[in-house]
Length: 94
Image (tube, rainbow, N blue to C red; front, side, top):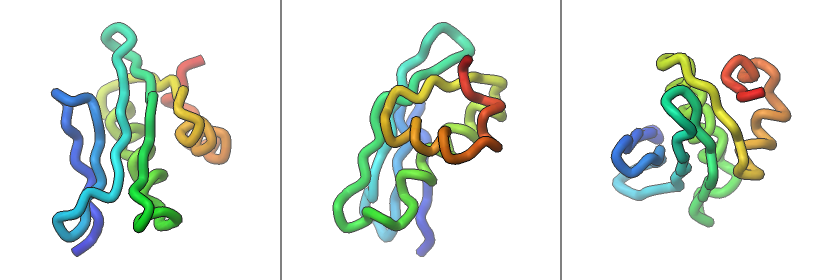
């Protein structure tokens, strides 16, 4: 079964699941109505190095694009993903 990313809007987080196991999660906080901060990304030890963290950040990017939102990546991991991928700067809060 492939990894599935679930957006839990009420908890303000994205979760990565595979075979009924949570591989990691990314939390965010709203800044007004059109911006959010990625504040924390966690990947469980058995899933480290498998692209889970990047998949979580990219799910946040997709959400931002679909809803015309901007992202402030305060989480060091999320910031690293933004620094390495210029193609997602369209959602980066300046």
